[in-house]
Each structure stands twice: as structure tokens, then as C-alpha cells.
Length: 127
Length: 131
Image (cartoon, rainbow over all chains, first blue to last red; front, side, top):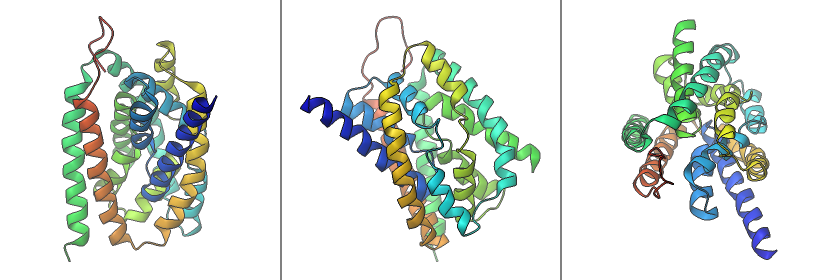
């Protein structure tokens, strides 16, 4: 019973942490939730990824979006254009994930992300 | 703008389904560098794009393989709802330059997590090569 409660609060806290990242950086939060489920709650990788997709089905970032739209920081038109590609791309990626060896791909993507991160920070704080 | 938008969305979507990570990590830098948005506008637009359940198609693929814990997912969603408001408030009170710098740091951290996840992957049941 106590263990179940602990697990429940752990998942909720992982969600809050993911949410702060979502609002602060305009991302989905999966990058925080997936490792939390795997490392803290003992989920396997596929199960964690599928569960993270559930968390992103309801409009979880709505309150974060509200904060941005109040100060005019949303391009609604570009947003609408991005949606169809994202929807179909996600199905394609989900199927690929069941077929491909995703470990080396993950590592390639991690290197790419790290480089973009360095570039972002550098170009922001150089001056 | 139309073609670029659809292509950026498609690329981000493939990564959403493939890696189970948020499309925003890809969308935000793409909007900044290809569509020349400022950091706040890119982040706000990314949050808007993530409002409809665009991962639903990918979710079905995972669901068929019984790789979904519904209760844990709903619980995480409640957490995100609460956290995203806090994060949004923090972001709008940060200037665009610092926000871009912090976004860069976040990307580096996320990359390290992604790499570690790839490196420490537990062996899978027989017959499944992917993770």
C-alpha cells in the first residue's frame, strides 16, 4: 500500500518536472518523463515511451500555452501548418521504432542534440 | 512557409514516434533557424502545436504491442498540466537571449540523458532487437 502510494507520487512528481520543462522550453515533457519511468519506476523502454505518449494526449501544456499567448508569443498560423506533418510523421516513427535498431540512432540523435544545445547557448551568451 | 512547415512537422513527428521524446526539442530550434522566429515565439508556437493529440497515431502502434501503462500516463499528464503553468510563467519573465541560452543547456542535458539511456539499455526478451 505504502509502496503503491510512493510509486503514484513518484509518477506525479515526474509529471510536474516534465511540465516545468514543457512550459519553460516549449517542449513536450517526454524527455523528462521517459527516463523517470525507466529509472525510478522500473518500466522497460517501450512501455515508458508508450506511456509518455498517453501523457501527451490530453492538452497538458494548455496552461503553459496560455502564459505565452497572453504576451503574444504564439504564431498560430505556423503552428497549424506544422500539425499534419507531425501527426503522420509520428505514426511513421512509431512503426520504425518496432523495426529498427534504435540504439545507434538514439546515440546519433543525442550527439546532434548536444551540438545544437552548445550552439544555442554559445550564440545566446557570446556577446 | 507552407512547404517548410510541413517538412519540419514531418521530421519532428518521425522522432516523436521513434524515440518517444517530445517534438518540441526538435521544433523549437527548427522554428528559430529555418523560420527565423525569436526564442519566445518559437517556444509558444511549439506549445500550441503540441495541444492536439498528435502522438495518438503513434500511441496506437504502442498500444497494440501492449507497451502502455494507462494509469501512469494519466498521472503524468496531471503533473505536466500543473508544471507547465509554472514553467510558462518563468519563461515569459526571462529575456529572449537568456531563454535561448537556458534552452541550449536543457538540450545538452536531454542529449546526455538520451545517450545514457541508449548505453544502459537492458537486454530485451528473445527475438526483439530494438529497444
